[in-house]
Length: 250
Image 1 (tube, one colour):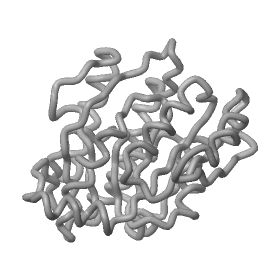
Image 2 (image 1 turned 90 degrees about the vertical axis):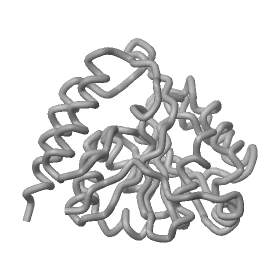
Image 3 (image 1 turned 180 degrees about the horizontal axis):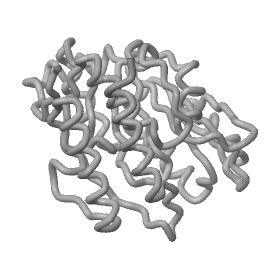
Image 4 (image 1 turned 135 degrees about the vertical axis):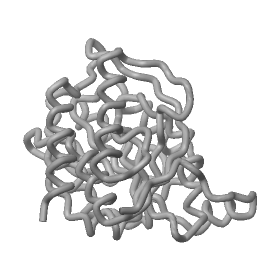
């Protein structure tokens, strides 16, 4: 089995410029009742200057999310490609819907809750100057970051440990929300999960195929459950089962 690595390929200033000019990055933003942070996150994504398209999937929101998206659609560039589920189906389902319409070379999923900083897109893109690199994860554990709770932090470390044991990998942050993946590869994985099991499903299927996962350090500003964090303790159990399932699925 292939082992993942936290090392980055050697990057030069010329390589960075070529990556920025030639690579098309599609950003998927699944949203569910994120009226408080939606304007800010879209502004930050647009401000990076490295995004080819922004696809926003409103996953059955019941607050003002839909109205806000309509106002933001053409307020700046790139314009938003808006998709909508009439009822809430889950993060994985929203990502599958968005993936059908993306046109970029690589896909990044951006949560709308401001926990992850779009200013770090270039850090995630840099390793892709090596044509052999198809997947880059942003690891919250390769540098010091705040923790939302001891339970959440060690739950994430446990998922990484289980991943490494099952797949012979060396990743440090399986549950990271920042994953850049080559679009044809992501489509080829034939995603199935509807909820937060999107992350372990992708990781398991990539490693099962022997595809290396490169990691780079990123910052992280955790949101509390009181502030609207949606993932729950039982999602960790689902993630463990998902990792096991795709390791042994024929």
